[in-house]
Every structure is written in C-alpha cells, then in structure tokens.
Image (tube, rainbow, N blue to C red; front, side, top):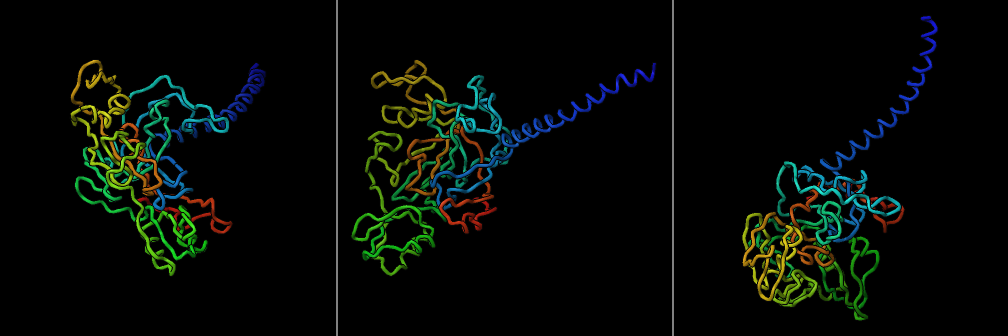
Length: 367
C-alpha cells in the first residue's frame, strides 16, 4: 500500500514540478515589469531628444536619463495604464491609459527644489484633453522660478533685474552678410551649423549660431557683417503669451512678468486676467467668467486671486527655434516630471556610417 501510494503521487509531483518551471518564467517576467515600472516611476527614466529646441546644449538624437528623485517623484495621477509606455500603445498608437480613476497631485520628498538653470522634463501644459501625467513630455531649461520677475531685452534675459548669461552652447539667430561667395558644406559640418540658410542672391544668410560658432564664422574671409536678428521692443506678436495687445511682447523683448508663487496674491483686471486665466480655470480648477468688466470666480466677483501652486518659466537654449513659455506661459508644479542629469548615448541621424555615434557626448553630465 505504501509503495502504491508513492507511485500514485509521484506523477502529481512531476506535474507540479513542470508547472512550477512555467510559473518561474511568468513570475520572473512579472517581477521584471513591476521592478522596471517602479524604477521608471519613482527613481530614473530614459528619454530621447526629438526636436532641436535645446541645441546645442542637448541635441536631436541624445539619449538621457532623468532623475525623478531630484525634485521628488510625483505619485501616479492616472493609475490604470499599460506599463512602461507613456500615453500611446506601441505599434497601434491607441491610448495606453484609462482616464478613470484620477488621483490628486502629490509628490514624494526629493533631494531639493527646482533651481534656475536646471534642465527640466515636464508635461506640456496646453494638452487639456489629456490627464496631466499623460501629456507629452517636454524638456527645457528652467530660467525662472516661483516669485521671480522675468524680462527679456534684446534677447538678453533678466531675472529680478539681474542679467543672466546665455548658456554656453545656446543658439541665437543671426543675419550673416558675405561677399556673395557663401559657405562650404565642409565648414558648416566642421562647426556643426545645422539650422538656417541663404536669404538672397546677394550672399545674405540667416544662421542659428552658438557664441563659439559666431566667433569662428567671423574669421571666415568672406564675411562682411554679423548681427543678431531681433524682434523690436514694443512689437506685438499675436501668438506670444498672453495674446493681448496690452502686453506688446515678442520672443526677444518680453515682460516684465512675475512668475506666480504659492500663497502669492495678485490684482485682477480686464488686462491682467489674461496672464492668469489658465492658472485659475485650468490648472487650479475654478470656474472663471467675465460679465462685462466684472470677473467672476466660482460665481463670485473677484478683484484678486491667491495662487495654490508654484509655477515656473521654461525656455529652450535654441532661443529662436523653441516652443516654450514665451508662447504658452507658466508651467505648474504638478506638471514637473524630473531633472535631466546626463546623456548616456547620442545618435546623429544625419551622420555618415563612421560618425553616427557622437562619441564626445556619451556619458556627458548636463549642466
């Protein structure tokens, strides 16, 4: 009887052992997905640079790591989502998340606060049709923090009345006049000049240049003049925030504007309301109405407003080829994703077979 019992159960044990092997693979896969999701959510995440708005500080094709711990990881606001993707399913392109439920904004303690000059990844504020944490990721330099007064005068940035130096590798737009002979492709490749082109047959060029490239171009023998191309002070551009002729601002001459800080109170009138309209109605969720010259917040007349969050001002280092706060205004603190810390790989899509990889950019820390 004992022998028969042993034989009878040995088959079950073998089946269990076989099933356990399959389960081992499933358990390992589940563990890997969960671990990767937690690392991506709370510690560090990989990103790529798709556009030239940060050239030449960050370049198209740079692969970088973004620290979630620097400012404190934001807890999930859209908890039901497919793991390891942002807002679209791979290949099919459908939505990768459920809009229900939505959790309120919270952030874990971090190593510090956002500082002026940090390169920051954040959710694009203007995508009102998506949950905050599923809006597209943008990367810019934070040039102004909550409470700062910011202005631009002939491209030069001022924070609280103090001039701020241009980032070392930033680009600006220049009118370059030559004697008509132009530039060789070899020279443009050597200086890594990738934006701009000829304006006319007289040898005038519009080029986006770093400070270093500006000096190098001056040494070319055919240069007659190099000068910044500026929008004039007082020139109103209708697609520049806050889209109101009372604020005749443009990308080169802007402000002064005060960046809202949590607890700060501002006076509201028919002009200043355009500065804070999105903050009140979209970012902080109040009902905002205008009845003639009367401002109604949540149905009550209001001539002032106190901010519930901190806000930031983001700009691209490629000052004349960047969609940034000059176009859409303030970035709320609940849109902040993390701090860009270093480039681990850089791929030059326009390079030849021998220089597809930008070796000088690998493992470069972001300043």
